[in-house]
Image (cartoon, rainbow, N blue to C red; front, side, top):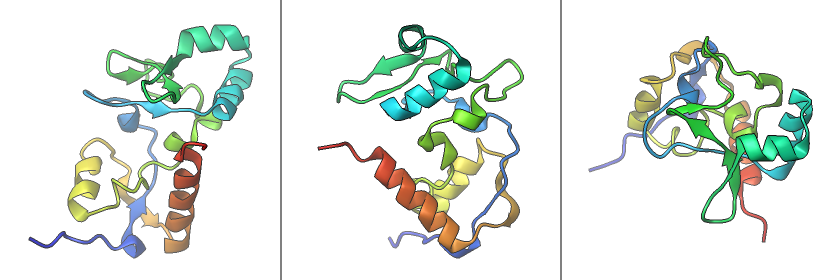
Length: 144
């Protein structure tokens, strides 16, 4: 069966701030490099050690990320708003333009079930989508 291709030239997205991408059941995580962690730590104006103890988790592969609690990012407030939005990691900045989300129409539609911003707003220019994907790949590729 042929995979239903998704035209990157027709993707619409306008973040509504709903927090849908910050909640989920199962195997969800937000990877955050040391540079991203420092940016968040400075934004919160807390000590490095306190930030790391409270908000960072180490994964089996050696990478690190932000903790989740009760199927939510720890930085999602009671109103489902991101408390670190200006300092959020690349993974958050590039959603929903992740390779696995734009891989097919089915994956785009599946992501739209949790994200009310997918399908809204103006068409995101193809060059912008490709740049976001390029940055995401660069920022998530493990260092050798």
